[in-house]
Length: 373
Image (cartoon, rainbow, N blue to C red):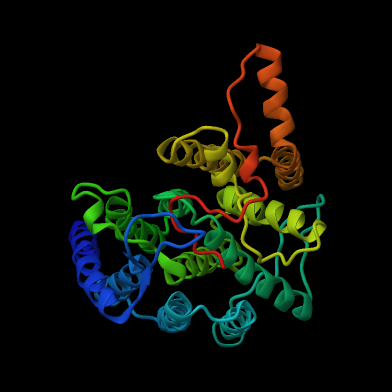
């Protein structure tokens, strides 16, 4: 086991340097423009590096089962789609179609679906029909992929939130005695760490900076939903209850849902980019990029911790679900009225700290890339 983790860390680190050279030659880079204010062209290779490293690791250090092959093939299709999108900016409709196709491959070939929602409404488990199960699974896959895609807006955030999610899942697998899936989560976090280091400029400075790219956010989102299905939908054994999954991915999920509802209310496409994500708001109220990263990741850790504690203490699933909806309602209200709340706080304490109201409807993006298109 230590050998596997050491191999993954150094393989991921070395592959980042290899792929960044290739990326610059083929134009797989993020360039500054009206929406992206970073300095210089940044290779979009984080996701390619992580996927490639994990593909070797899974085949070398674990049993290669039909499920492993199916996962790697589906993930490869999505990563290739992400690379093409990073390079040529393909239609979001085509991306959604491919994501739906991968969802059906999971269900029809691997028999992986969201068919049991647990005891959300009381004493009886919610078992879905085949048609409803297919629909919920497709929505779940597309939702998870795009939730993690949309949070990729400041340095370290996607890697940080992904590490929180995989770390939480790995802990639950470990507690329940599934060493294989616990090791899988550990290897994923290990593969992500070198990307986070270079993305944040540690230890080699900004010269070797890389971005995750859509290939990476898509791969991470797909891997999350795959492991959540493994954890919650087993016929003989489930490692976490379905409602716990909501807490494990709470921040990306709530951010995506809030943004989409607000865009639809404005008559806009739910996939239209803007500056109303949580990380944008944190920066616009005066937090630095590093502080925004710390605050959001801390929120994610707290939410995942509450979910894990509730699961281990066997808190009623209906109570957990109602509590999550309550937290989401508070989050939605605060984000929707954040400027009024901040203004009220300033008036209450007699401060006049400036707020970046001018950017509320601006097309300007933060100084880092946002993989959302």
